[in-house]
Every structure is written in structure tokens, then in C-alpha cells.
View 1 (cartoon, helix red, strand yellow):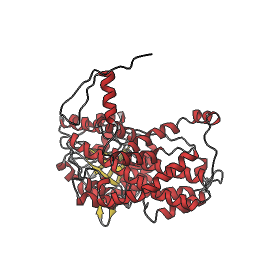
View 2: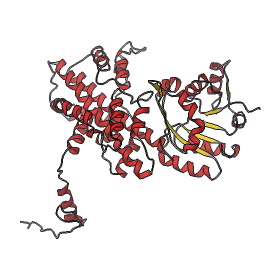
View 3: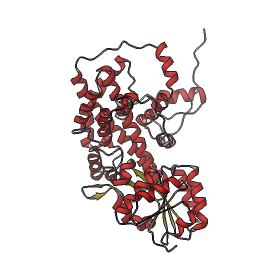
Length: 473
């Protein structure tokens, strides 16, 4: 077959197919491959008359691409990516490029870059956020890898990405696995904000006995102000959605059990390795795990009692407090994620520019919000800012909103409603602003039971004490 297609897409599920259409409508010719004949036939049917080719034959797919080839993978992370690469390698030539646009772990991306380089092949890890609509109409794109190789695909990625004020939400982020690392942290922040919204929902539903119609109205209003963001917007939509089967509100028909697929846990895991505190994101991951214990929770509900349900008479007051508490906590969610990116950038030599990351998160991605304009400004004004909470503008907003989050937590505790994400956000703020923390006692304990030594405030070095033991009576 004569070579004629500029880009290849492996994986024609919802995301892959929508991204392929996006590329084609922006003037690029694309070939698609999937082992599933149904997916290929669907693409052929939907793309009739367009410059799109689809096949279940991998050889035919590779032969249809212009050389040097650019092949995009949108397949599940893990062993499947390696399997696809193994199948592709014998068919490729030097200088061909494979772009993994799935949610692969950043260490796998580093390994694949090194392994393929020995065969003269290029590999890029590219984070993509925005779901199926984003893929179709413009996602936020987070590419990493060789800067020179990125130049080959820059125009295409800029064309298909989301735009904010005419600026494409894509930029080369750094070498190696930088793109997949940034996408991982994006997802960690996403976990944190989603858990905060879920706790807000429970407080309004259980403490104020609000209907889904009332919740829809509140979230719509919030999305016009401080909390304007994609996640608040879709939450408003969710409360208005009816179930086609029962006619009830769909949200009430959905099981209260949400598992996590990995990226949130990966974020927490690497933060622990780098000794970066992610209190809010850690809690969000744990609460998904707790929600999955549905059967245990149902039994515990009958046995373990809390305070009696106490409805609030002043719904408006709590609603206003929650708006400001949620704003406070969202700032800390971004602060924690960006703090991790700062540490990872040094450890893994990514040389990440946080202003650039905030810029490309403003459109297309799941965590896009009006707050990102303030975040971008903060890192533009102070590129070496140690923590987002130290920005003059954002620190003032945190201090003004702290009363609300403290009161919201009190309301939750009094009602027996779990609000661990709000607690984690406030604890991060209070811990970070504390000039003294009780870690001196931790050092003393460790030295007492394990001779781990401790540091002193008046001398440099490590010290060990033979601690006196209390006489047993």
C-alpha cells in the first residue's frame, strides 16, 4: 500500500477514536488500528468520506504510514503497552516514533525510552486529560521526552489541543517521563478535589436535607463565582440527570463504592518516596478504598453509632461557609500537587516550569478552573516560589477563608459526617504555617527505643542519649 497517512492510532476505543477524529478535522491524515473488528468497522462507518484509514492488520497499518512514522498508543497502561510495542518493533524503522498517550507509570516510560533507543526508535510519554469530549474537541496535553522529537509533532499537538485565549493547552514539559509524571500528579489533584466535592455533597444532603434540585441550583451558582471549574460544573449537571430506567435522580441510583485505578495511589506513593507531604491527596485515595468496603460498612452502620442526625436550620449560612471552605481546600490541593512536581523536577532532572503547567491546565483537562489563572500568575511573578500558599494573593485568600473551613469541619464532626479531606487540607495549612512542630518528641522516641540518634537546636551533628528508664513499681 502506498504510504499516505501522517499519523497512526493504535486503540480505537472511545478516547482513541475521538482523538483520531480531532486530528483529522484539524487537517491531518490518520490511520487507525485495533484488534477488535467491531471497533474498526465502527470507525470505517463513522469516517466514511474522510481521509481516515482503519484496519485490523498491524502490517497493513504500519505500511500505510509516512516515514518516519508517528504512532500514537491509546491502550490500557501496563503489560498491554509492552505487548503492543513488542508487536510493532519488527515492523518499524530507525527514527520512527511511538507516543504513549495512556496513563502509564512514569518509571515504565523511562524504561521504554531507554529500550527503544537501542533500536534507533523514539518513544514519548504524553499525558492527555479531558475525557472523551476533551479528546474530541480539545484536551490538555502534557508531552515529555526528547525536545527535538517533540518538534516533529508540535504543530499537530497544538492544533488538536484545547485553547484558552487563543493559547494552546500543550507544551513540551521536560525530558524522559516528565509528561507522564505531570499527568500523574494532575490525577492526584483531581482525586483530592473530587473527594472535597463529595464531602460537601454529604454535608448538604445529610446535614441540611437538601434535594438534588437544590444541590443542582447551588452548584450552578458556585460555578459562576469563586469555584468556577469543570468539576463543579459537571457536579451541577449530575444532580439534574434523571435515570432512564426508574425516573429517579440518577445519582441516587448509583452504588456508593468508588475504586481507584492507580494514578492517585501512584501520586501518593512517589510523594512518600520523595518525602513530600500530600495529606489531602493521600486521604482521597484512602477514602475511595474505604468506600469500596460496602458490605462491611453496611454491617458497621447497624453496630457503630454516632451522634443523632441534627438538621441545620440555616441552610444558607452553611452553604456560604462550604463555598469558602471548598475554595480554601482547592488551593491546598493544587499547592500539594505542585509542591510534588517541584521536588520531582529536581530529583528526576525534569526542569519543570510550574507556570507553564498551570497554563496548559487552564483548558481541556479535568482540573481546569478559574483558580489556575491565579496560580499561573503566582509562578510568573515568583518562578522559584517554594509553595503556592506563600504567594501574596493566594495566602490572603487562604487567611480570609480559614474561618469557614474550620467551622465546616466542626459541623461535620458534630454530625458524625466524615470530612477527612477538609481536615487534611486544614492540617496541611496549619502544619505548614507552624514554626514549631512536635517532631522533637518523635526524634526523642526513636532514639530512646532504637538508638536512631537525633539532631539538636544548639549544635550541628547527630546525637544519641542513654535514656533513663522509669522504675517499674
